Length: 357
Image (cartoon, rainbow, N blue to C red; front, side, top):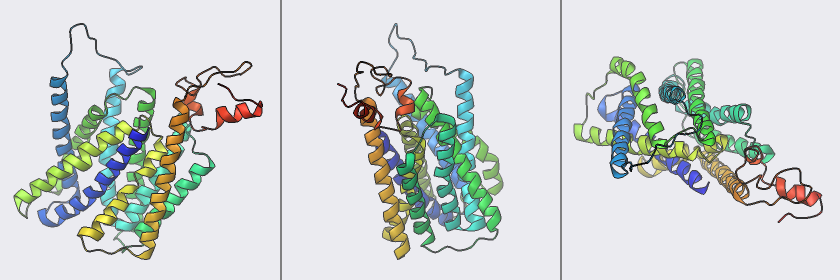
């Protein structure tokens, strides 16, 4: 599980750098946000395809080997998941950029990234039975307050159509929540497949969805040094796209959906640090406090996930008279429902006045 949290942190930092690179591209290339998103997706598809081919050649199938099939992973289900991922990614990216244009950066960021964890928490509870508990709810609330202070503490120019921008931001959050919940569920059930393959299929579908809009907007750069533009596009496709999303999808196998969405809020903190260090911007006191609160919430949730993982993998021996079988926290189907309450085995034993094992 510690590896899963690390993957999400790396992905969030990469996404934070992507925002700065995209902003530079808007200024120097003459391309709009949809065109930049299209080339970002295209670069991700190219790099993930190359990586997939390299791995296949390095690990040739041996005679007698049979390909492993994920449980209950029918071809139709896999294709449906890939299409849903691609559409969700395209909606998330495009609607967010539209929200920035209509309502301003601050409103778009707060509504999109702030409502995302809420939608994911509700969806995870309804579809997978994942519960945060009182401490988790307080931590998520603190993270959202930190996000509000971080983004609202900076310059917040008002857009041309605030209500339309709000709607686009909510649509963006819904796309993000859909992709996160889908891959958390498939990863938890063991039907998600390889993370790089999932990211590749999703970005291929998303690229096709964005192509008509990019053609209407203007798909080719019209200004700036071509070598610099290509270099920035290559970075955008490699780090915040191919690498970040492959790590994010891989992490959802072990990290709860709501926790993953809150840890991913490191993205705006990274963007703020980059703005201060390289773009000569300054953080207001409110933004500084918001960054600290948000990072504190991320640390608390990270430690909570580590405790859950330790208890979930620890062997538990059933005592005589126990109503639950031995190993309930070590991989049985019931363990998935108990994983959000790591205190359960010890507390039950203390009630009986003894410790198991």
